Image 1: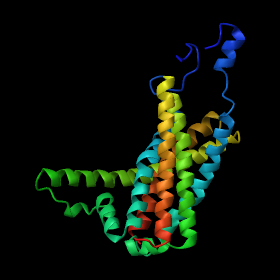
Image 2: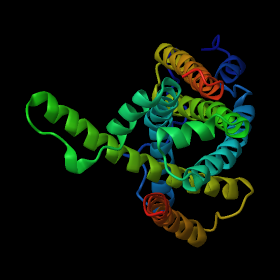
Image 3: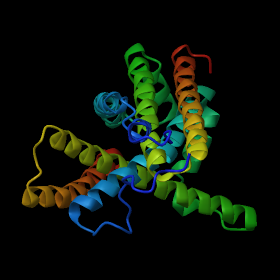
Image 4: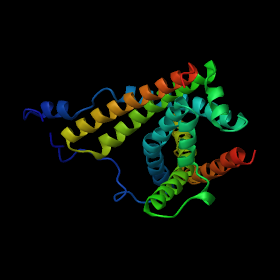
Length: 127
Length: 148
């Protein structure tokens, strides 16, 4: 790092200037998780039972489908931000770190996409 | 690039002295990692099973919430399948506990974010109380779900 001068070393090792944004998004998605997980768990408790018929009929309605769809997005976003910090803390070698975060991004977008697709399929009654 | 020698590193279990604040901090990270991996995996399995119809949903519930009294133990394949079902049931309960633990330690972070709760006594007290509350909430949730 750096070219040997002290200012070069400081610049190379300094802040990435994107930490506050990451930190804030972690909080915003946490609030989304809090509201929507509360909605999901209360809905579970209010359903007559958790049979296929009961759950599928419930999730096929527009408000539950929208809420659980947004929950999937909020959860995967929050999980991606959190796991990224874990990787940054414990994977020290920069090539491995880059590979881990790249794989994490693929998994987070893939998982969220698959979850939302499944909800759309339930809501539109394809099964 | 190799890290420079004198850069600060993250806390490690080997370096930090155990205490309530340190314990709830590592619990937050452990439960968050568990929820982000196993929890989201189960969530997607659930949604995929729902979207795939009654048979897929029955298969899903048969794996993650099997009736432990009617498990089969004849033959190697049956034993492995039964052990997986027991492990998944433990995982489901563990994930529900992880959710409440992560929720409460996350709310603790919101309090710390506004600059409150740093006094040693109150910090230690809340760090010790919240994991107990998480266990009580987990028990209350399952009781409400299973005994209704």
